[in-house]
Amino acid sequence: MWRNRTRSLVVITSITIGIFAGVFAVGLMNGTIEQRVDAALNQEMAHIQVNREQFRENFEINLTINNADSVSKLILRNEDVTGVAQRLLVNAIANTASKSVGIQLNGIDPEAEKKILSLDKTLIPGTGSYFEDPGRHNLAYIGQDLAKDLNIIRFSLDEAAIDSLASGGIPPETLSKLDILVNKQFPGEKAFSKEVQAALSRTEVKKYGADIMKRAWHFRDRSKITMTFLDKNLMQTGAMFRIAGIYDVNNSVFEKSQVFILRTDLERLTGIDANSCHQILVKVNDRDEALPLAKKLRTEMPGLQVESWKEISPDLAMMVLMVQKFNGVFLLIILAALSFGIVNTMLMVVLERTKELGMLTAIGMNKRRVFSMIMAESVFLSLVGGVAGMVISRLFIISVASKGISISSVSEGFEAMGFSSHIYPSISGTFFITVTILIIITGILSAIYPAIKALKLDPADALRTE
Image (cartoon, rainbow, N blue to C red):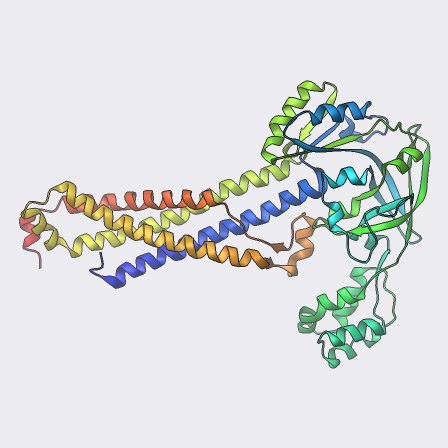
């Protein structure tokens, strides 16, 4: 096995590096998609949604689920269901003194929502609460990007912000360049960012830009917005709402379009019956159970549209499937490349040991044992390199996953697609078992041709080989 140690170590090292690169790449892609799916299911849409038929096509206000409490109880009878939450959904216009934006208004029961989604945990500290003011009405929970669009969040530098930046380690020569921005109001984040980039060098922006933006971020406490929409009689109505809190998720489209208010407030303003709703969110134990449960509920509740998350967001389901297939193809390409290296190495072994193999055959070693000897060496090289690669990749993924990988330089583009700019690689234990089996198969297949080559050697000719 170690006749040529350098060659064996080169083969093992190349297999180790190849497996490490492949497994880590798979872990990185898996982590990215898993984060996106978890965020979508736990912050945006839940596992299953129940609506009246055709409601999702036009969001007509009178297409409500009647006897919503009875429907919710029917859903909860299924043992896979862990919670339900009813919502009212209305298309609306959000207005401030400076801007108007089209949104979707969600009338919710905060306590029921906490059992389904984790939006309450995405509250930006210092911006309020998740409907925790008892007895208060007309409160709105809005996204950070919408708050920026409506100028509820503003960017400006004052003396306190400059002092904070100085204590944070930004050099005085850099801060002096920001003097022209102190106490100046900007209409939005882009305008402020543009001025900062004009005042500082590219290196300074890259090094200190994030801290400057963070210190310049200001929320106008107890800000108000006016929202207008149609009631159940298709008459225009609306009210002024005070900001309860601002949430931050890794999906700028969601942040800009989804506003949450108390369901009781929306019932009062639209005149919709208290036992009616537009949508019922359903949470299950395992997301893989969502599709079969949705099919079951469709048969139990005719007239209602029941859709699992894969049907609600087919693009997300397609991404999950594509990544799974891509991971398999990617790994097979790496194993195929490694197999060529193993074949080449084992052919060299056979040619190098021609005289040895001839002597072993001449003294009575049968072809089966010669074949097994070549096969065992190939599998050993593959397995040692493969196991080493998997152990290293596993330890590296665990180490990286504890802190994640930040790609903040492209955060805006990632969040526009709903992905986090901070990736935590992840991979399942079954994947390593699959890879181990594939490595053994690769080693066996790679040894077949060199082994056959060894079996074809003529003992007499082989013994005459110098």
